[in-house]
Amino acid sequence: MPKSLLRAAVAAIVVLAAQNAAAEVSEKIAARLRAAISANTGGTVRVDQINSTPIKGVYEVISDNELFYTDETGRYSFVGSSLIDTVERRDLTAEKLDRRMTIPFEQLPLKHAIKEVRGDGSQVFAVFEDPNCPICRVFTKFIDQIDNVTVYRFIFPVISPQSQSLARMAWCSGDRPRTWKSMMEGARPRLPEACDTAGLVDILRTGERFQINNTPTVVLANGKRLVGATPPEQFLAELDKGGRATTSGAQR
Image 1 (cartoon, rainbow, N blue to C red):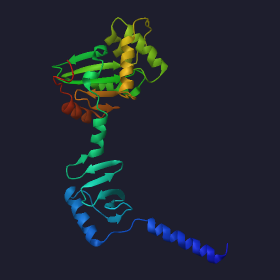
Image 2: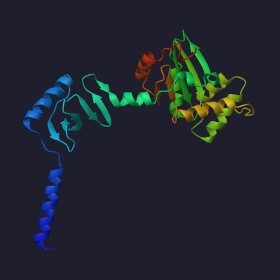
Image 3: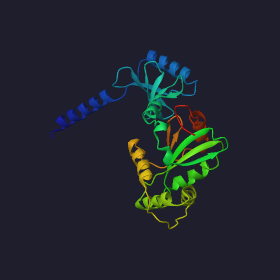
Image 4: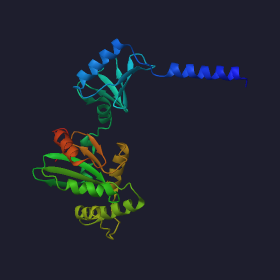
């Protein structure tokens, strides 16, 4: 390729890159957005630079080597994959997902659960667990320490074929609660599996219906779903907010 053509090609690429790159906005817009972001976040977010984006009314904000996007008011921001209301300190994306993931508590097959009542039983939740799930075995020990709760434990063998065998043995045992507890503590007793497992099948179908794909999964009385080993302080806070049974919700 002749040098003149090569130089022209390089120049074209440079121009195109410059056109696509974010550009700093006018000082007037930058000052307005800086003031809005500072006010909305109580001064906790320091703005280093504000750039334009290809989307009209959306601006790129660089803060302490991190990047997020904000609207022209400086109130609503995209942080990671979440839309944040910086004034009300609300993660709007998480709230929407929570609503979509809600499971009506009264639609759970509670009659098939292992029910435990401790203290006054005033806070209600269900947990889907599998004895071959290491996180479940740790989380269930935490659950056992919470007082004034009604817990519905659902045998939910989804980790492996071995889980299904253990589930059938626990389901068919003469003392289902004690057998299941021992399995969650690591015991692997040899028990008969011959009995009517229709209830166990109903639990699994409920999991499929509500797309419960992981263990442990907790469903609070208000229908909120918590997946995985929620940190203790966060779990207790969520339980305090959403674990109270209502007349149309959880049964005790």
